[in-house]
Image (cartoon, rainbow, N blue to C red):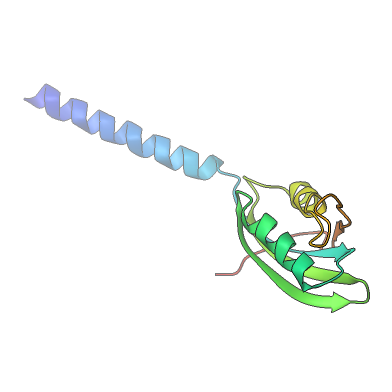
Length: 120
């Protein structure tokens, strides 16, 4: 009976160590960046971009925050271990125009160069 109990104790210790080790090694952070997007012609374009972003794994939230001249600014909340800023820009630039699905007029650049951690 003592051997079984000792074996169970060892299993629990190993399991706890594995979970703790994985949590400490995790490089995931929930970050918020602002992306300046040029080439948007109408509100339909903004909806297409938002939908394409929100369907990307690792992106939690997308909001339209501002419009300055020909550019629109989106705020994107994402997990750094799943998706990168570069991938977010690629997703935006691969979104089709609402008037012509064969055109990809959007150009994206990050407004905030150092991403901000999401506040709890």
